[in-house]
Image 1 (cartoon, rainbow, N blue to C red):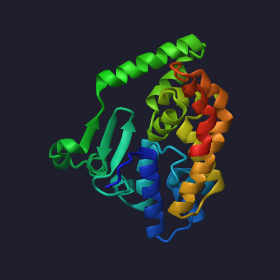
Image 2 (cartoon, rainbow, N blue to C red; image 1 turned 90 degrees about the vertical axis):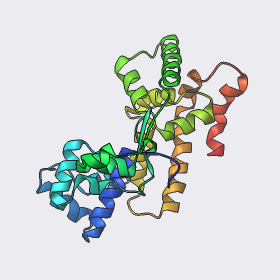
Image 3 (cartoon, rainbow, N blue to C red; image 1 turned 120 degrees about the vertical axis):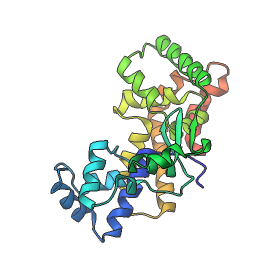
Image 4 (cartoon, rainbow, N blue to C red; image 1 turned 180 degrees about the vertical axis):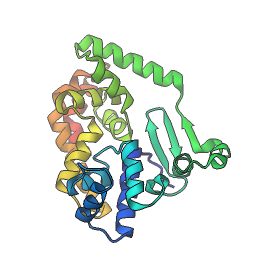
Amino acid sequence: MQQTPRPLRQVLGAGLREVRKARGLKQEEAAALLQQHGLTTWIRGTVAQAEVGARRIALEEVLLLALAFEVSPADFVAGEADDLVELSPGARLTVSAVKALLSGNTAAVQAMPERAVEIAESRALTNRTSHFLAEVQRSGWADPALVERAVASVGEAERHVARKVGTSPEWVNLAALRRWERTWSEERDQRLAERVTEASPRQLQAMRGHITRELLTELEDDLKVGASPDSEESVKKASHARHHL
């Protein structure tokens, strides 16, 4: 079982890669096939970005992918049965639960054990969001659309960075959206897809760490704005975190 939950886009991307390779197709060949089945804007780069989780795959695209490869949408859900998939900051499902939902297996859905679904404490999440909104108001960064997206897109990567720099994961996302018009995870995975198409898990992890340090350098001043004011140390974390990732 994988302990760290993965965003759905990474799970689907890994599944797409498995399905493509199982059919002996190169990314260019897969893109040509997908274009014939309605995904007219998909090129080799689109496939590469989707496979490393740098591109979100919409439900419409999942259905067309399934049509093109002649599989069930559930076949794009990669991982062990008990691995956790993060659907939102407050909700995680196991791989088996996601597969059951996508395959339309109502009996399996009804029989899912409680551990298949993790819902965060609503009060804790509400308190954290309220604190974040207060910080947003004080900073003058109150763009409603960006704030809503920053809150809705929090994942494990944002939480990890937030702990390192002494701020909230929502603030990490807001700073990223203001600078790149992408969340922290989206920007990291976008850069990863641009630099790596085929690599071992170890190489991907190393490159992901390098890009994370790069992003921290670029966002250092913005992250300080949202840092906890409780101590000088929390402010210093933003400038030093990149050396410890």
